Length: 357
Image (cartoon, rainbow, N blue to C red):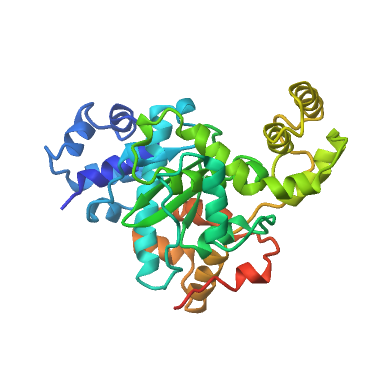
């Protein structure tokens, strides 16, 4: 039977209204709305027209119901800047990722979930310290954040949204944590986004984020403390603190120059006047909108191993997409940016990654 929920998912993924989809498919104005409500059973020609416009295989619309997402439980990095179409498209990507995750876990054994629930901890800096202690990484700089997250059972996916408004989000599903990262931003910003979403996962697991006005502020504070531990920062950066010192030091923690300057300010290493002056100079050098001297973007060890193992059986992305009844671009959007490039991973972290076919 034709599945109305699949139609809604594909339409929202393409950021189309029901009316605009009907117009492009040369259908009556209310046809899509009626189909999505389950009021009509479409004929073959109608389905073909819809599939053509949405660029989804016809078989996609006959699959079982997609996984539903609770919008109130999804943490969007820039929720206030998002349009309804952008939010729906991102949530649809999350629904697809859940299906892909199930497909993968039927074939591979992934690392067990080891993400502490610190919902009772009100201080983000303490929460960041407790996660570091639980994961045995002390106060040293993190060599590969995506690898660290995956080691502890976080399912990490990429996003293909070509907009800065949708840069990251996360949620818990069936006891498993998911993080989605958009590579539209710099590598440093993407790493901060990953730490920000980890903050949501550990501090706001049981909460509706729409009701927490301070949730974003708390996640930002967690990310700052998690990526740049207080004692490590204070021991590595002495006086005087100049723009040159910040640009050199930021490479240790792989954060943006602005993020490090702000961290130094919150740790009272920079006065308000010094912080403002440094921000002005960093902005003049182009560090407010980008990272002229940046770090290499991280990739996923898990996805690389999965795809290599599948390819050994002559199963590539195209074959996976066909089996899922997806457009290839959707599969690539969720995995390609995480699997194509690779940074050096410290052996101590890489050895924790277990993938059993």
